[in-house]
Length: 300
Image 1 (tube, rainbow, N blue to C red):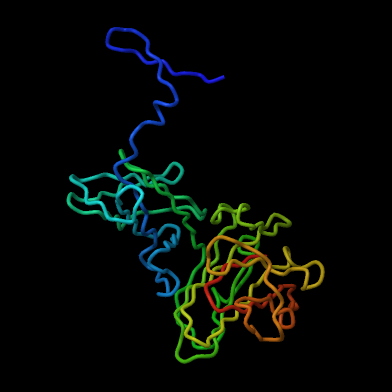
Image 2 (cartoon, rainbow, N blue to C red):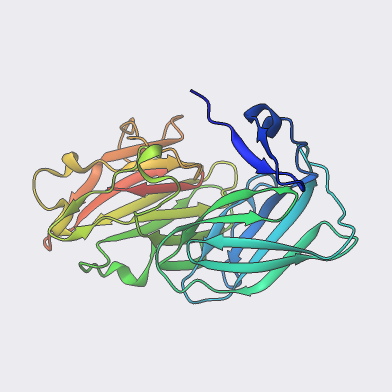
């Protein structure tokens, strides 16, 4: 049974509005695209953010830049607005206003703030425009630093119940240093969560975090990440029982990586789990070695 909506005319008569009439509405005059959501102190390596891929990354409590573009509906063509256009970017109960100036197609806000450590979905909306959404990762702990072959870590990887995951990174081969960004984020609401194959390990009131590595690798370079997992989460059973989930390219699709062909050997796999190097230290911390040649997200 189809229910029809009733509307009143100026004469007080009720008219029936059918679903077909709703479907006949003209499309929006334009559409919105969030082209940036990034804190002002973070630098993404050039190769990590192709022009057509938007990476949302902010640190809690630090100003970040929101950038929104207006496009001709159904295309990638910029749409110049004929008057100042206010775009609302919302995330739960928080919202920001980004204004696209008259005669332009891009609006920015440089001092947006997000005080929570939770990841969030930003939605841009404005009257007469199709909306856009962007998953934004909140880096609870992060570091920008060039890598010259030595292992670098986040705060020396001191693990606690609230911070049970850490990542160390080394880049070898090629020539020169590699620009990198290391970070850890909460698992909850992470880039689609369970729908992308990600279920972070939980035990004794702690939940594994997601570690991210953005790297700008030269031809011939290979990155090695050591994903640390606290004893409370990964201390029971053999090390091989705690093979991490990985998301190569940071696209939101997590899966178990194949075993490396040999110790420290990536081969032609692109990403692999080095079970020969993976170990557990005297403090019960599990160190999972992962080799890869492009940006990687990972979690136990």
